[in-house]
Length: 352
Image 1 (cartoon, rainbow, N blue to C red):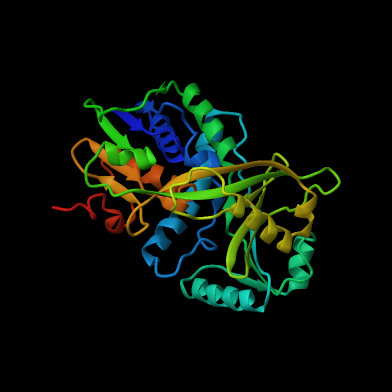
Image 2: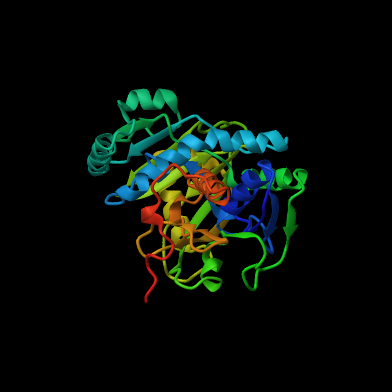
């Protein structure tokens, strides 16, 4: 088996290194502080249906394929570590705060159904049977059984432990240049642009909150609740550790710290959907920078004899982790990745 260096220790780099090591490759992972970037601040929703974005049809097969691959990735992790991943398959509810939001939700559901995705419209009464903490004042609800979640911090810790158990060399240094020996996978998010010409990456910041659910309310929710409040998206993610994540904003203002207004907006909208949030403990507000490309599609593919690019996953990095790792393994081993990657060509934005 060949030697492979994976540059980048976010969830995608970790999963890629793990899949390669599990197949017997000699793997080195380079990152000064693994799992401290966008992974540390991510929501962790595996939501190929709820995360659908209009006019981004090229993303849909990637998202759906990655969701199919996730159970296999979880199985590989669990084969090499006993640490928890926070993987949950409870499904997702998407709700609307008022009639205008309900119209938006209906249009989105029709769009998802048109593209062959499983969406089940529910009467509010039935939605509240599934999640009694939902406000009785909501105007609509949709159930998406196939949208799942992981806890990114737990998942990253589990993968680091699995890599250690597999004997992967973790070099806690920043790559100043591309390694020259063996095959190289460039998966260090925004940092990839400094190591390879032609990658146009921009930071897209997102604020996310972590709340503690008091014992008398636990569990406040049993599945992910996403919603629209005055057309603003918000989501609430119950964790296996008893916490609740609330997110997330999306802004490009070069301010890498939580904004007061964003924290206010997220809490206000979360309380509108689930009033019990008001009684939760406020534990943390953080901000992460996600790597975006000009068309918001990832850069994924081989660009030279020994270099594979895997970055630019924007808002879908956690969901697309399983796909990124699977495709990269196939490329390293010279196999067909089994999916059309033409929309993800790493040099598509290079200026000649």
